[in-house]
Length: 63
Image 1: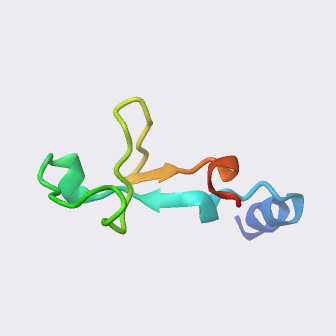
Image 2: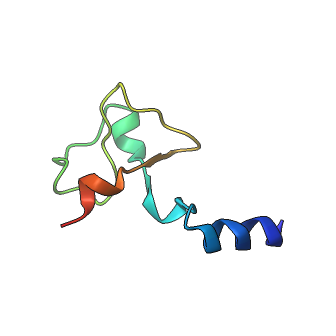
């Protein structure tokens, strides 16, 4: 397992740093904060959520 993780890091394919936790209250339709005010992700319905997280597109966050 450690070897696989090291290979991913060396190859630049480790996308864990792009994962954002989805707002639990948002998932229950109870979050009263705006997307910009909540520190957790508020993904649209067409975005796949896996284990309570979404993966952001690198191009969408680089400046």
